[in-house]
Amino acid sequence: MKKILIFIIITFFLTSCAPQEKPLTLNEAHQKFITLCQEEYKFDVKVFPLKNTIWIYLPTDKLFYDYKATEPKPVAEKKAEDKFKVNFLDVQFENNSFVVSYDISKIKQYPSKDPGYASNNSEDFSQKYRGIFTAILRAYFDVKETETASFAFDRELKATPPQKIQAYTKKSGIPEFFVIVIADIKTGLKVEYIANLEDYKKYANNALPYEEYSQRLIYQMTGDIGLTNDAEGKNLKTREITWSEFLTKQIINRINFKYGQSQFTPSENVEKEITQAIGETIIFYDFDDFDAAILKNLGQDKTQTIQKSQIKESVSKETDPSRGRFHVIQFLNK
Image (cartoon, rainbow, N blue to C red; front, side):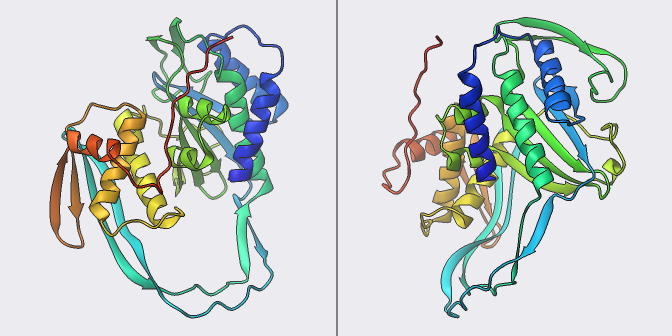
């Protein structure tokens, strides 16, 4: 995915050097996005605009992954390392609190045997991913953010059921969330991305590091038998993405990243690492509409409640030099 995102950044800089068009209304942005996908990228996308979330559905009959044989790797020494493993992790937003249920323990891990093959995104999938995100960049980045738009939607824009026209008024322009669904309509498998538009803007402007952005982009692959042979997205289950849902999924991302991908070894204090992940998430978005975090350690059968003030303090007083720092830079519009 890293190469794909770098490609999108390059595309952004090339398009940003071109003469700037006048800002679009949201309806104009919808139509521009659909036109770009159909005419330039040859994608038959369906757009489902809701109040604060835009769903984009792209059906395909190609497989998501290619499997290829690889060159043999040197036989690793069978030496065990003590490492933390996430045995179970779930985060919910309940009664105005983040409820984290987890089982994270330290175990002996041995080098895995080389299977002799590797999997990568298929070229078809990579083209669709690049095209969709680049079209979002080109269509929605310059929407008038001060407009008060009254608009209706129906199956002409492939809106969510019921089929009847629904109308609403939205101030400040564009919705905050996009959900991109790429569905293999032969098998019913789907890949779903939940993205915050401001995060994507910062990343495309090179103001957000790849490692940080990868934790903010919510990804999951699941099966949905209802999407089998559904080229129109009639059975796509759309909903408004709330901030509480987006943040709970991002907290899961951050915890999994810390224990599976980060180059910095986590501390022995699991509760501290989880609290840090929650604190980073809520502070980066200035999210204040919660009371506490409830940590449920399933492995040790104990529960701990951490108040909002303690969570914020844990981040503001973090002195571990291994952790990166984020600085917000204000760019003036030309």
